[in-house]
Amino acid sequence: MQKILLLGKNGMLGKALAEALYAHEVVAVDKSELDITSATAVEKIFAENNFDFCVNAAAYTAVDKAETEIEKAMLVNSEAVGNLAEICAANKIKLIHFSTDYVFDGESNEGYREDAIPNPVNAYGKSKLLGEELIQRSGCEFAIIRLSWLFGDGKNFVETMLRLAAENPEIKVVSDQIGKPTYAKDLAEATKNLIQNWQSGIFHLTNEGETSWFDFAQKIFELKKLPVKVIPITSEEFPTPARRPKNSVLLNTKLPKLRNWKEALEEYLRN
Image (cartoon, rainbow, N blue to C red):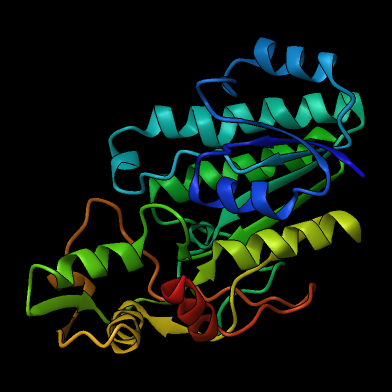
């Protein structure tokens, strides 16, 4: 049994991780219990506990807001992460940190291996990339897990589509952004397996199978048997403050692959 500090316990991924790691001794906290931007507060919880792992599922995730709240995004996703990594290094604690497909520019046709060179096109992606770089400089033993298009218990694309479907017979959805959906429950189970069969490095963990937001939406309505007309539109027709990568497919070449996203989505909608 490992002693694990879990940060961000009330987020979509944090909830799934808390469930998956039940067999270990887990100290789970949210931002009201531990301010990860305070190095003093982080040092104190490490001093009071003999942790084997720190699993960081805490993050600033408001992609569009980050364009105007860049300092806040950098504080949480970069500076706090760098401090956390240094404290882990000093205490010989293994750090598992979650990053994003948005560290890439989306210009690749093939998708991105773990060793592809990042080039973020928005402020959120830049803040997450700097967090990755600070971890790698810290000297701690780490696993950085990049994920994409997360869905699970919380606010996510699936819930947004179902809410819109209840109010509209037609929904316009972007069809020219390609990625791989990730079910929080599957990612949490894979994280548990990584703790049990430890490897350090940068990893890509998503459900298998690539799709567009348009096809993702269509599949949701098909599985829920909802008579909603989905209209494909371009990114230019749906402008957002933050630019999104057109093809952010993450290629998993290192860890056991997760099941297809359609199977995971079916389970999520059933439950």
